[in-house]
Amino acid sequence: MQFETCFLGICFHALDGSGQKFFGFAEYLAGLALMVLAWTIADVRYRFRVRSAPFPLQGITFFVVTAVGVLTLLTDLWRAQQWPVPSGNLLTPGSWQALLGALFLSTFLAWTWFAFIRPPTYGHLNAERYALTLYRFVLKGSPAELAVIADEIAYSARSLVRHATDRRQMAMRDVEEGEKGLRKVEGYANDLLLLIADRRLCRAIVESSPGTALAFFSAMTDLKKYGIPISTFATNIVNEALRNKDSFLYHEVEGYQSGLIGYHKPLSQALFSNYELVDTVGTLLDPIIDLKSDWDAEHWKAYCRVTLLVFNNYIKQHIERHSFVLYRAKGHIEDAASDLYMLNGSEGAWKTDSFQRLRVVVQFIRDAVDSLDKQDVAQHFRVRIRKARGHPGDSIYDHMASMIFEVIFHASAVRSPWWECWSIQHNAVWSEIFGFDSGGAAAKKLIKFKLRRLLFDELVYMSRFPNFKGARILGFCLNVMGFVPSAGEDGRDWRALHRVVLAWTQKHYAWLYEYNPRIAEACLVEGFTFDVESRRLVHTSQANGLRREPSYRYFDLEPAPAPGPGAAAAAAAAEKQVDASDDATQGASRG
Image 1 (tube, one colour):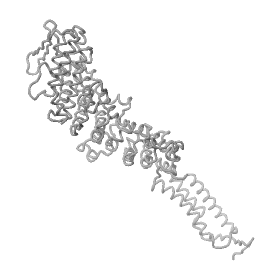
Image 2 (cartoon, one colour):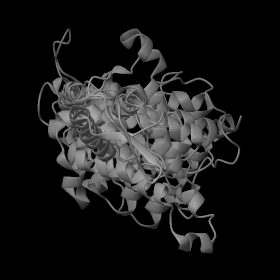
Image 3 (cartoon, helix red, strand yellow):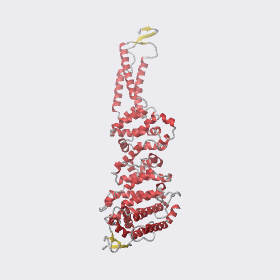
Image 4 (cartoon, rainbow, N blue to C red):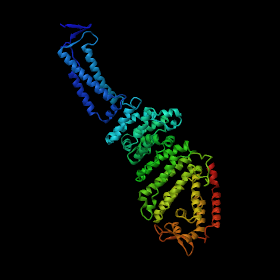
């Protein structure tokens, strides 16, 4: 029998100690033990998710669990002592236990929701918490943890791109809005894009979570936001991918090698098939100098492959404007063959990495020219660029011709032994470049024309100022073309140049030898000699194979006067000869 006591209109009765009990302090401890065990064994992935939730989940959990524990303990004490409680049906002992149990269960479900069901993404509610949490993990720099974090930030890639500041849009903001500064979510998004550029995190993305890079660049393409501060991240992602030969750049090759991924090339397409993105970011094709110095032929092959993706999109949609990113990439690819001079005088050059890098560069040139040839040559492109016009008049065709010229110059450094010299200069360079289609391909004809002009201009400059660069170019031309111009279809693309080279050599070589013998000797690779008494060049073919004795070819020279008005007139006449012989090329290029 219960006794009631009333005070100020509120009646109290003793709590029944034998009443129903389904959530007390003992049940709380059992549930808390399971929750603590789950929280303790949770790995870095779930800790990151909980810490970056839209509200301070850890703090709220501590206070709720503490409050529920204290209240369940007091409830059991109240029941054991049968202390008075208010009478009525507003809050029964059963509903009180249900309320405490619901609070306890809600805490567990909140952790489960954000840790497993719906991972939090960057947004207005958690911008600061997300940034601080990611900052702590990146600052710690644990490779095992960064591998997990690299995968986690993929969920927020689209949100970060959406909230980040596009510098192109910033330029359109009015002064008054600019003075107010960036919104909190926008400022943290900018900082996070700089934070994920950490090379350790980029290395983890490339090794274990390439889909994160795909998520960021796909979001940029979808949202058309290319001016966000992601350039450092882009540089490090590409360079780490190039350094790691097990990365997507080495697996996304041809379909017959990599299967479906090779046909789709998801990451390569996302990063490099959109020229507007590459051009605005500006650093996707910029190798880190310290890493580039260690690249071998495989690295350069991957770099050329992604550069070709950018190149193909550029010539389809943006060929009329100058491309700074491709111009820099052109310079890097040229440099891949810059150490060929180290092969001079050594045998077995074709086995070296330098030779393999040369083949990669030449193959890139062939592929790029083939791509250009599939596009119509625009009418506004000038066939010949006068020096007075300078670089603003240069086109992609001029850049390709200049690239071939630089490769020829690098190859000209190899002068001996004769077979290595021939293999590099003729087989690996000249025949590959002038061996591509000699038919009616307008782009190829235009590039060959510009290349001939570059080679010829170097000879003309030799008439005014003899130098070792021109000497090496002359030696290359004499070696690959010989003393006698070819007849018929063979050599049609370079016959005019061949005649000018022979004419210049015949008129100026004897004078050059008298002026500076060292420069004159630099014009001759192994197998070529200058007979001073007979005043002629001699080409000796060594006895090998079925040839039992050496064979000799001779080229008579003229006692040319020192360069002066007469030499200048001769150079001008030779230039007119080249112009006349290339009229057909110019017409075909316009056709």
